[in-house]
Length: 346
Image 1 (spheres, one colour):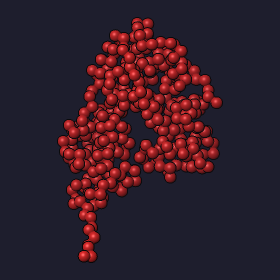
Image 2: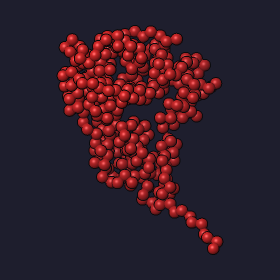
Image 3: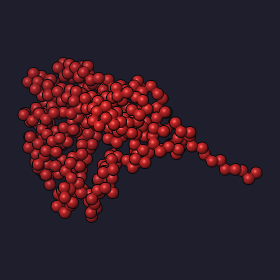
């Protein structure tokens, strides 16, 4: 049975259907939200979007639950009105990261279970019979539907405790699982929105957001070498960035170490990541410099082997160069595979 969430809960999780119904009860249109009376809502909506642009995550501002709740759909309108595809992707992830942080701190199991049921259509169980630290369970078929988006070994079913058709999960993994789902949900809502003519204040906000959102850099501008020169796994990771997708951690590690090991500079590599929805230049620079051996243990990381790439389910092997290599960095440097031609009996 569904629970009735309070205003504070709805403000924390404004993507829920109950939150939408609560917002509709105010009976407001865009002209109302663009008026001086609702200026705090409009300002918070703009702030949500600009936080996504600057920080890659929307903050928790729960002082006024109604302002927080109403600002979410208005922020969606502002993002859609810019017409910027890369902003839509970044905003969806930024809101999902906000929810992830709130769920990590959520102590009410009924709220967590409701979110899974309402957002994912998944029945979440408390599981006292699970291994220590794995206090939740979902049907393994539901787990498989969602875990395939992750390429790290720990998400493979074989590495999860399973019993009686259920997969046992720790709270942290549940939260990580729902983040990708919420991001996809918000992004799909953004894509389906139709924005009518905006009142002057909101139109000005759209212009301001557009001006403050940096354009995505084309990978070709940073890496002038033909994409055909890169191994399929690296090309796939780059394509994910081009398309506004969220490459898994291993794909980013693979791509970064490969580019550094073929002679690209730290700045060259950092330059491809602004397309990532969760891009943060300070964090990215630290991570790339660490892999380049400039920080930390001052050891330059090697490119993962092809065997390692396969184990992370990120291999997109071709039949030309891949058969003769054991590491992606050898792609194109070793001769192509030669197909054996059957001799004719003639």
